[in-house]
Length: 392
Image: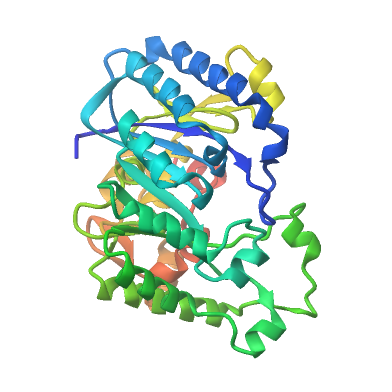
């Protein structure tokens, strides 16, 4: 991996009509695909001066709105990226797909335009769970997509979601398959899968899922049940030769995602384009407009840009590094004027007593058990302005 890799993220934040997100549905943007592509091209062009001479190691076309884009439109964007940046000869180019846009024909076109990695937002191999999430595709659709992928040499990632509420009658009748069983069967039947990302479902206010949940009729997982599922899933991944390289991602040898890894080091730049995109360039964090109309109308697309403070760098280092095998680089924090072992001595002592973290002279990282509770550990360790004021 190159030193200080630069990454590019292109966002298509359009929901496919699922029940658990707050993004625009396709019906509101489908007719404006061409306009959105041109806006992306204009935004990429606007970064030409900042991009001069910079070599990009990874490009990620993300968001479930990729499923409404034509491969020819992705090519237009990719061509502009190649004109504006220097793409490394081994540049990893990922596209997030749904079963609805990953047929053999689509995959052939993705290969022709230079895509090297497919991230399949499958979420579950259980039709009941997919129904709860409001998905229009089925397990059979997922299998057809995975079958099509056999004929190509893409790197392949699958996204799985855990902690999904299901109807009580389904749980009581044992009609729902266990996530670890789903995963084990997948890895047996599709051995080309080399990367697995695991996320916990978030029930956000304003979503159909939140509005429609009837807690009398729905079985919500307890904390212990959720942890049990994760432990079993981790066991399956280890059995198949996967290694965890951060809080959410597991990969076999040589299959880890360059884009994901690039965020571990806090000085690695990320150029981000599109609605609601957030990037980091020249130590300035910027956020684009998160409403489509405002993004299309704004000449520079950026709603807010802020130089990173020491507090930002400290918290980003802890957030991105704590769940990695190497852990938080304590020397780097000390160079920022923060000795976390002193300033968070009480919290670290408690977390060590719970066997959630371990510390050496140079690193602070999660234990194997603690990796399941990284968000809890972060809540104890992150800083605010008042904390850093005490060090001055």
